[in-house]
Length: 79
Image 1 (cartoon, one colour):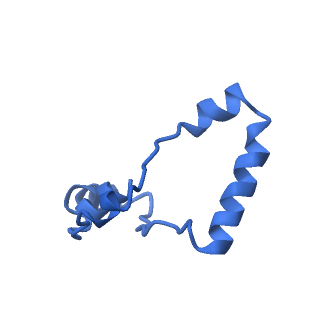
Image 2 (spheres, rainbow, N blue to C red):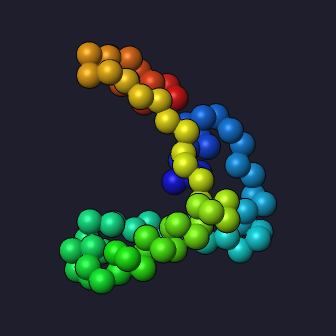
Image 3 (cartoon, one colour):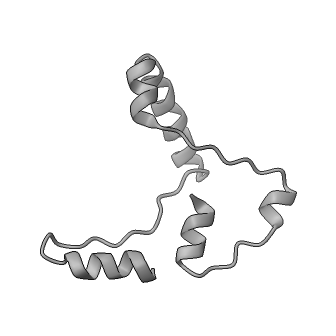
């Protein structure tokens, strides 16, 4: 997701993260929670620790009103 966001925002990501053996994982949370509901608390604790340590940070976002569909689509298209 970081690479996609960087591309959308026209930021150079560089190769440094790959040299440092950084790994990327995609997780489908709806399937995770429906298959293993006991993991929800474990994941919540991991995310909380990550947020407090600064390892997990929110992505930048732009909010649009329900009547601003055209502007939202233009923003998604052009970044």
